[in-house]
Structure formats: C-alpha cells, structure tokens
Image (tube, rainbow, N blue to C red):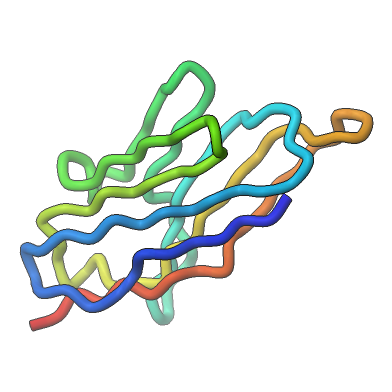
Length: 120
C-alpha cells in the first residue's frame, strides 16, 4: 500500500493548512488512518488518528485546533489544522494500517512526509 501526502507549506501563526494523504493498492480493509509529526531533534509523535466507526483521538497539544477526517472511497485522510502555532512546525507523516489482498495480510504503511512551517 502506497501513501501520497500533500498540502504542507509555510503559514503565519494563527493561520490554517489542510493536509491530504491518499492510499492506493490492493486494500481489503482499513483499520486506522493517522497523522504523525516529527520536529527537529524530537521523536515522532502521534497527532491524530481515526479508526473504524469513525472514532478519533488527538494529541493534547492539538485538540480543539486540528480535525482529522477520512473519505473511504477513495481511501484518503485529511488533517485540517487551524490556529497554527510555531510549535506545530514539523514534518508531518500519514500512516495507514489494515489488511490487503492477497490473503488478507496486514499492512502498516507510511507516507513520504510533508513539511509544515509556522512562522511570521
């Protein structure tokens, strides 16, 4: 399964960006879609995740400012980021987990990362 992320860029504090990530391949089922981020010198951290039944969870640092959503056809996940802060600056990665054909084997795939920079 391949993931293609897009939508990063430079934005001023208080601004908004929308990230997209499209999954392609022989997908049987998608268990979860998520966004992670990694700032320079820091470990990669979970930002938001959406699972089966549309359950969602957010990191405390983005709760109330970011919104994760998905389209099942095609398999695309979005991250709407509002009220951005300089500390949101990072490379953002999308992640997908589920089962794929043939034989319904598990997959755990990552996108290539997209840079988000929040600066005046």
